Image 1 (spheres, rainbow, N blue to C red):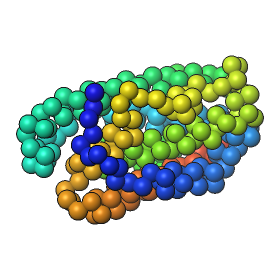
Image 2: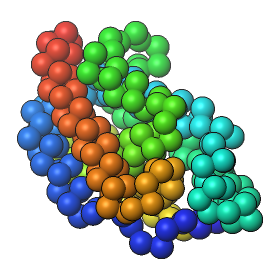
Image 3: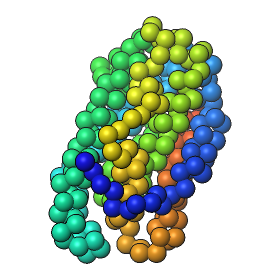
Amino acid sequence: MYALLFSEPLVNRSQMRVFTREKIYSSSLARGAAQGDRAIIRAMMIGWWPFIQAFERAIDVRVGHLPIKPLVARFGQSKIKTFFSEAREAVREMKEEEGSHAVLWAEGAKEFGLDLYADNYPILPSVQTLIANADSDDPVVFFSWLAAVEYIAEELAAYLCHSPKFTDKFARGHWTWGLAHDEHEHDGPSHLEIDEDLARAYHPALDPEIARAALTANMHECIRLFEIASYDIHGTINETIQ
């Protein structure tokens, strides 16, 4: 089981959740989906699909390729030897879960007449920006980005899964992808906790205030770009599928 390197969280999670909710609630894409607008739900399914697939691939690339020297220098070799076997397994588990989550997203889209695997839908520049940062070689940026995506997924799922006008559009009366993020239970630390732990561990600053500011800024940037991409998806893809 993965043991966190730090006993206390660094990022203020309550504030980060509030920040994330503000961006989601202000999004015309999320609000339209919550109101059960089928065209907007289709746009959401199409628009976010490239990022969901890229997120799965980005985690896959990291399996077995986490840099060890910065952590050995900081925590010592004996601690990091055990840590790395657990960390790699945790990242591998993330990849497997995100792969299954991608399948759940595609299955949800089928209920709106979409075959995301078969059809070639456009990738908007704002979504491509998110993908590029998810592929960052900098482990601080990479794991900060993953943490931010966890905040977004959990808060978006909570918003839409508690909207009857949205869930009523599904044959079983629920959105399976959303439930996978809204009702998240883990044996040990959550993916969010692991992402934040690794981002902090790789940050070179020993001063926790410096590391906190950097991680918070990275996550805010990801969430702001999510907001921009949401507006683009609503405005651009919604027009193309009418």
